[in-house]
Amino acid sequence: MTYILHYAPDNASLIVRLALLELGLPFKTRLVERRTHAQRSPEYLKLNPNGRIPVLETPQATIFETGAILLWLADTHNALAPGINTPQRGTFLKWLFWLSNTLHPTLRMLFYPETYLDHGTAEMVNNLRAAQKKSLLNLITLLETTVSRQDKWILNSSPNIFQIYLAVCLRWMALYPTGHTGWFDLKTWPDLLTLCRNIETRQSALSASQSEGLGATIFSHPTLPNPPEGSPL
Image (cartoon, rainbow, N blue to C red; front, top):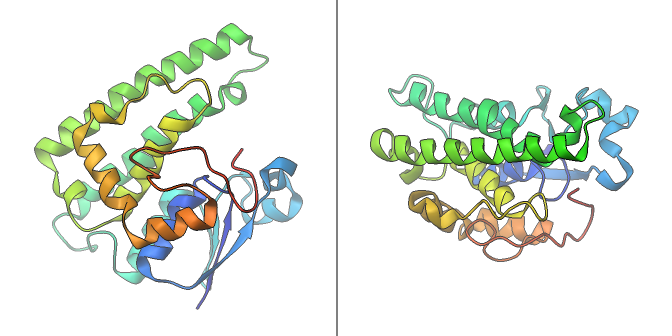
């Protein structure tokens, strides 16, 4: 059984790639070239009518939405997440869906404010970005303080899909959009910095970095990618 991951460098597909590598699963990649807007092509829209990356083709179904792919992989292969009938399952799910439904959409609004504004002016774009930066600061602080006090096992246990997802989101905050990252300093949240340092030394991260041109310290001190193929933006 070989999966097919439709990806672009340093996009949400990176999260899925890391999960596949952690699970030791065979998979092939199909580049979605963002320079030519391939995610809007008729062929790609048949896979994901939303025109977003990633898509994972499996023998059972073609899956889109990052959180859905991660949870499907974890449950199918019984790894990277607490089992369905374990006491920790509910707590794990609430934070995983918090990432998928709250943090990640806020990041998307920071990166692509124009898509949320109908003929918005430059001032409107700047105001929306400023609002998202403030929201993200509050969300990350909430995460660090709450998880550290109540559910620290989510950050400290063996790598799981929540940690992988979060580490990539933190990477993006340090890099994108260019010229709008001065608000973010990972050292402000020491538990999250430790998490990033731990994950980036794993073989999965090293392999992903090589495949997508991400550099060495891809989470704790990231640099803009230099991918061997494709464009991140």
